[in-house]
Length: 80
Length: 435
Image 1 (cartoon, rainbow over the protein chains, first blue to last red):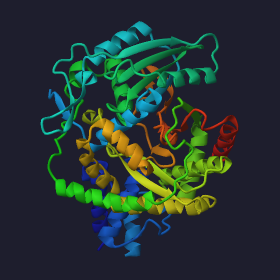
Image 2: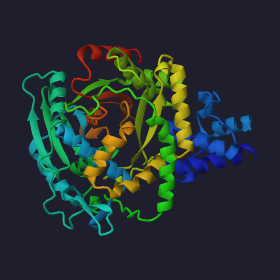
Image 3: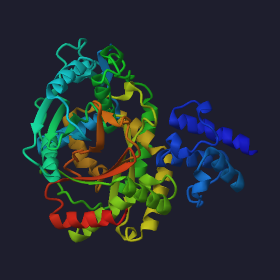
Image 4: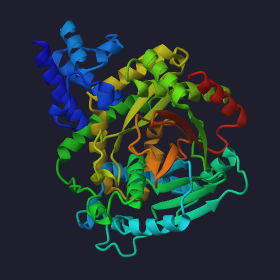
């Protein structure tokens, strides 16, 4: 699975969490600026576990990994 | 406009809490939002505008009723004539200190509504130095905290002419299906929640409130941080709990403070923490302004875990993840639909007798950002926005974190007598170390 596919899946789910259209989320937009707080982030971690089989909650991700959808997708790709 | 809005299970919990709180303290399950303004408002204009604004909301004249199918609903008058928002104007004498202003605000939120069908009151407090406060005291049966922020924001927009009464009318009460279907699904949700809660009911939870609840009035500690302090606090939270993990960090901080109080008062046991979450997400539509759109997480902490903050926060994060994965807040919401069959008084009795562990050791809520987006109210700069929620007497104490325009307010609400002056000094010292 390439980064773009992972990004698209993450954006689809994030859009549902934030109640916005998927095309309103740019891969390089800051998650914090999009309104992602702890609840939404935990929901994303749950989605990633179900979708990609990765437990990222306790994987020690750095701030840079959670900066944007693109960086989160890279972190997922690294751990698959 | 529909004259019937079915109540959800969460609305019914609030009805039960209102009964339990009112029975003990004389005031129901209410709260207050306060805006500190750097200017003054003409009181006649304030009162007139409030009355014109009220005309958009027949829901303010509503009451609970039951359909022939026994489902409770909010009966909304078909016409808005007679909708009324009581306004009160207060003047602080001379150069009132911030403590005196705060005591006045405390008094307002402890004043019972004038009838069982009054749900909001608007207060205007004139302060010295050409400043004022606007406080909205509200009943949780009609508004939750974020809905109340939205209500106040709408009032300001209406006052400044940014929105008309016609635009507001009809847009402000969501349709709510009767929820008479899906019984099997609701019982399954109940089974999921009960399985999770079983370990809680066997856990001896420490409490500051007496066994049968505390009848004293609600009292508050407010610790507002300036922008620099708030930035430092958030950075510390992200460093210790992980990026964007503000809520687990603040929950850890609240648990540490509560633990210190329990140690001082020799209250043994672990901690059960019901944590309110808003289910609106980023949906800010007016249709979700009235009634309740929240659910609960329940956290459990052993007293021995509290001394290690990293371990504590890690544990809380894992519980947060596990409960989100198990969709516990959604199951809780779904299960509570079943309770609507009970009359409020019976539900109140059941909560206090058989679901006491649900009240937990202390209440907790952490709101990332305020729904109140404007930086002005009635054209006047807002210096701060904070909440003063009453805590159910069975719990007695709660911790609240809210952010407004990059500033954090840390609020502690408690029944008078549960925290003394020495406790308060120690709490403020603990908080000062965090920024």
